[in-house]
Length: 397
Ligand SMILES: Cc1cc2nc3c(=O)[nH]c(=O)nc-3n(C[C@H](O)[C@H](O)[C@H](O)COP(=O)(O)OP(=O)(O)OC[C@H]3O[C@@H](n4cnc5c(N)ncnc54)[C@H](O)[C@@H]3O)c2cc1C
Image (cartoon, rainbow, N blue to C red; front, side):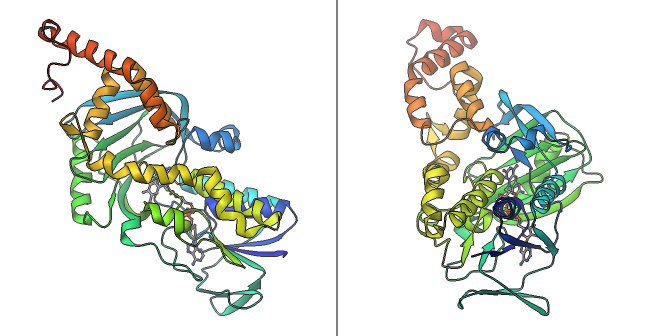
């Protein structure tokens, strides 16, 4: 197998192409836009930077952010100071640099839309406008709206979030994230070099676009984010169900899905660029080792068991209650009151704490966290110090 066609030149397709071309494969990447401002926050966490250090070290414009402000539905605020920065790119810059690397490794880059693929024969076939191409293997890296589905099911509404946002000509030095009551999703403002990416994501099955738009405009007004000159965007974002991660077919004899097309996205934070790049790499490794069908097992070992764990807590995080209030509100209060909990959440947001080991760390630090929370409450409400520490949760309003 020597000839590879990759549909989509985003992070997943570009990295997969680069890896395969370096190993001597003949690779063509087709993308209808090439480097474009794909609707996105553009934030890369520590795990992405560790795996791909050129994203931090390279000369391309990017913004390094170490401060995150979390806002509850009632307006409580907590600050996280990150040990490792979140690196934020404009997607035109990020896609451009990844495609440049792929081209330098030997990939042929073609600006075209692939309309159809046929994987039934010995060689796979692609319909590109009026022309027909063939390849030994097709990598489908066409993102969350992918409609090229050889022998697998499309993502359902339950696997997708709707996103709306604006690129705003303004500057800031901190990421802001706001949670809403009874809302599966969140609002964000991500500062880039010369503008902000401000947006909202919410479950497609549970919320309407009007609802999202209303929340987004209210957030921008509350946070004094100007609307003048802002450029609107909308897109879909995978938010996979557990069975989608564990059972959806992502590979066949001569095809495989990578990145958003395979729904490899963190269902709580919406982080997808790292998983897109890692899945592109892992598919390339499986192809080079001539063990293509091992690709899902390699993904599971690398990250999808962690994402599956996240899917199980996502609903509880957004809809559940803890100590009589929404989980997100309690999380923000605990961050404010407990340095131990704050450090844990900074690692989680920064990408150095995974979900699978989160429960263990929470349990191990539970006593210290509660002592700090109670101590902080007593300082704020001295009257409490006179009664039993656990007397009431009324002050958690
Ligand atoms: C609003 C929003 C905010 C986000 N914020 C973040 C964030 O801050 N951090 C993070 O890690 N992730 C974020 N994500 C997720 C992230 O954008 C994706 O996970 C990531 O881009 C997936 O990469 P990909 O290569 O799989 O797909 P994409 O980046 O979507 O690339 C797919 C490519 O395929 C091309 N294409 C599609 N169909 C065809 C076709 N038929 N023929 C030819 N070309 C085709 C497109 O032009 C596109 O370039 C966000 C997503 C959204 C929607």
